[in-house]
Image (tube, rainbow, N blue to C red; front, side):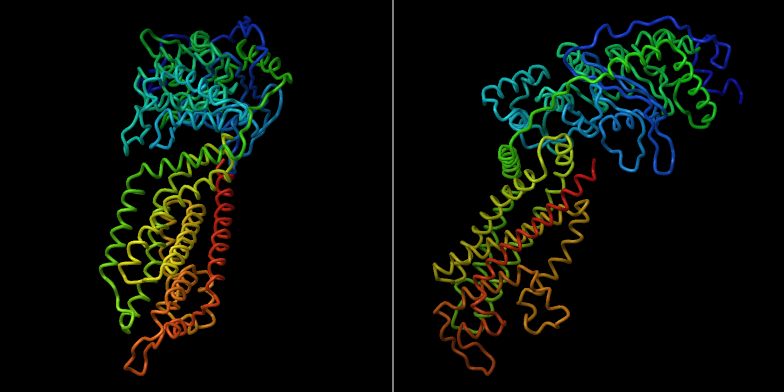
Length: 624
């Protein structure tokens, strides 16, 4: 390869080459951590090896340590293994990977239990955007802080965290959704993510690319906040970081550079200058040190073999260095077993109430959910009322029209409910999975709160439409009105259970909608209006028994056509209805099924909700 064309040569300044002419790095002792913190949590990892199912190594015998009061950065070029190392320490996103080696937390192997003593600020900031910063933090305080804390103590904790993260001026602002709904800035979002995670005062804090997407000023503020958490509060902080500015790079207490899944360097930023200089890659003036070091250990396209050889030589030099000796001594020292306190848990009832409050506020602040939905129901109630205004009950056509109105009640309450749920519920999943694996609440608390929050809307809107249309159409019995509202409420609950269950099972909104359309068509076709339930072929007639259309429509027909106003219907043709009983019998419905149908719809909802819950738990558990 021509010397001028090689980017490997261009990145080094005048210094001895690493190809063998550099003498072995001296073994002069380097200063280490002066003492073991009596409080706090230390994490050590030894001989950590991670491989894919296909056998491709991602990490190769990686050692390292993170201690209280220090901020440790995991750095490296793309594909170096820093994200894999962070995920392995967190016991997350390791599906399909084979992991060997020891990860000790205060000298103890706790695996996924690391969640109990740590917090994790992920790269993507996910919040309920309709809440204000203050509402979010107070709800999180009630879900994360011990139940025996008073409201005043929780408020003081929120105020302290708000001050620490410089969010005092944003406390009343809506969080918003970037690119969708206007809210707080990107820097405030990131600081809010930190504020959320440190509410419970965890001794360990992990962060994945905390400065990505921020301008230099905001990136510095976020890093300074992390420095304060480690230096002033004694927390153990481990984060991955990509291309930090030189000022930010120098704020870290320890840097772990990875190259090809191996440790290329572990030490302080000033020690990195000496190490890479001795390797033959000293840094020129006015050069960002982080960018310079990462260039030396990057695998460049077209120069893969040469780059790999170079990276291995750097890694080998580190193994031979006094820095590595110090690291191994510290791993041995901090690997001794020490007490480990877990973060306190909150009662299920409190978690349910906070989640219900969160999602109730979210629902009622979404105009497309509440305003449009209620406006739609008012409009449809008036439209149906005008279309069938005071329908003549003593007319054969009028009777047929009323049968159609009752089936429309079932259809409208079903389709609008199911598709409204599917429009918004899938977007909850990333936040649910994150907070569950953070140990904030169980899936059951979320699932029950979500059901309750939807019932608050979907019970009111249905009753509103029925109330308007019922009297305009010409139904006159007050008892029948009450029964109609109850039946329609159960129809809406049944439809809601199906909508929530499908969202819980389907991996995306697109899949959920694709499944729902054909399913609702099948269930509505077997509901009793389009096909006589007694005339369906035996091999397909079973479908009616899993259709709430069937139970709801039969109950509505029986409720209305047993009214005395249908006792004598004039008829001048051979095939017509003489009374309400004949209307019921013509559909092969029975009065004796009325109350049984109500019970069946209630049981149906519970069973479908249970199926959805099991599916959701399975998805969440598999997502770690």
